[in-house]
Length: 78
Image (cartoon, rainbow, N blue to C red; front, side):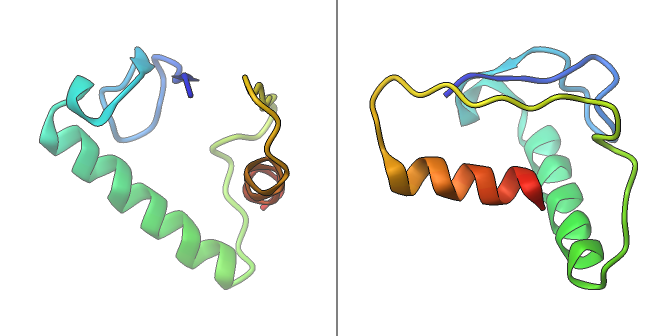
């Protein structure tokens, strides 16, 4: 899966394609995981955040996989 991150990605220096874990420094990966944990806490409390406001997300799969597609769709909707 190729994930395109914008240059203005919050709290990380990721402004490149995220192809694998070895493509970014450890401190950037740690920051990304911290941000994900903070967003999950906000989501559980019913608090909104503006990070993806006005952005479009898309899914593209090479092979059909209902379970994977449904998992990604659920995450995107949250």
